[in-house]
Length: 190
Image (cartoon, rainbow, N blue to C red; front, side, top):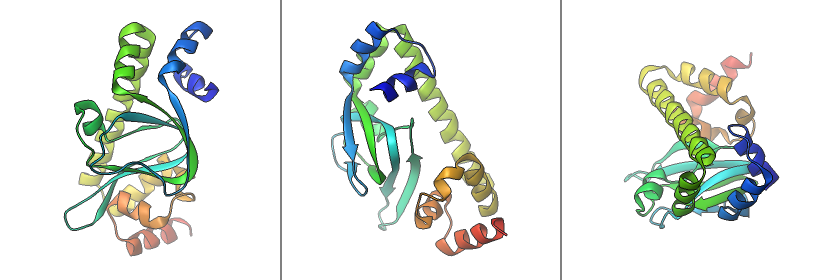
């Protein structure tokens, strides 16, 4: 739970007494590579904070093609947000790519914490705002840039993920073929 507290305190300080209460809303879980936190069709009960490991959030289209919306590493939040906030069944999958650990809480718990503690309302608002900004930047990049520009931006933003995620997943995330990614990788590593 110390990592959870450190994560919260990156945005707002909390007292020992406050954190003792906050942590009662969270559950910790070890997750193994290839384990799913959410399957399409599941009831989406939780929002997850990656404390360790690497995860991917994706969906599969009608043709069976996988589309990766997000990778998540330490201190990144993830879930099927439409399912979570609207209390619908999942249309996404959340899968562990590298053994890790998550802290998770329910929507009810999240809302209760936000209503009882201005600090936690502020924390969740900052995290949600940052996530929305990142999503808008990703969409803009996908719509208005070349594969080379997308790869360079990904490499700049997430240099640690380049070596930890299989290239086929990076290619899916960038919207390029595996062959194109190999060419981009080779040209950037000369």
